[in-house]
Length: 360
Ligand SMILES: *Cc1c(COP(=O)(O)O)cnc(C)c1O
Image (cartoon, rainbow, N blue to C red):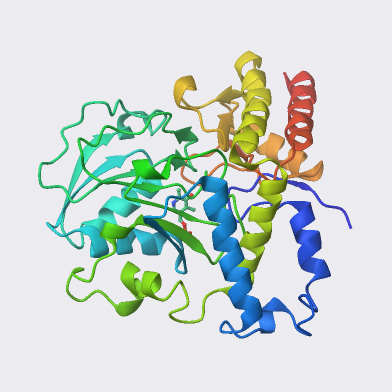
């Protein structure tokens, strides 16, 4: 067996300790005589797995009592519809467009109501976060929506927008649990787990009690009401049991590592190694406004497509996988989520240094 350094944006690397634990428990979980994959979702064993996962997540993040935690399916793209279907009482919402995922969310919301795009960084290919301190928030907006870490473009909000009293809805898919977050700043904060938390198939939604309503938009399917899942503790129907179990193991791993403040410190160290190198390199350049740089997704280019290709090919051969940039951006992107060890980032920078010497 030889494991590589996997810089994929998602599904992405998971902590090796967690994968080993999964392997250990694959054939028999506890004394159950079966795998978690084979268990009834109504069994005592699975109930304990789900309850423990939620309790650990609440402890890690510090989720207040008046927020519900939901483990849902359908990925991020389903949240693009669930958010307006459940929250668009007035059928108006404000969206801040900082990349493809916010753009897609806004387009989906437009099926249900009026979408005001109150800020955008499209003018400079989403390479920065617009000033959101005094935006023309719509008086009748049901919520203000952001994508907090832009997986594709590598930018992140360092301060949350001034929503002028409106509820903030935030997609944190590619930064969930990478640093502490103050849940009280949000009405809804959600993330697909396949970027930074677990195996694809679970979306974690953290939602304030009063936003869980019966009076959702007419025609909203039962499965797409937050209330359905909140009332049934994420067990309305069969949840992705095994995936939730793996997320639970990751929560335990994060607790062992010292929690989210400790993760943030390591993530800052990792990002600094890479950005510091990019800032002094004559060959490789970061593509975003330094003040808005993501700690999780680091896009970079050489400015020469052939050289990009050569770099990706040689890096792949050397065991640095999935460094190709998103198809809409080109160049390279290194995603350095929680599970990427600092040694992996250092090894990548060493490899880039050698490549630059040879090809400069
Ligand atoms: C990957 C991603 C999504 C889309 O998630 P799916 O689960 O593939 O629907 C949405 N938002 C962000 C920020 C992402 O990184």
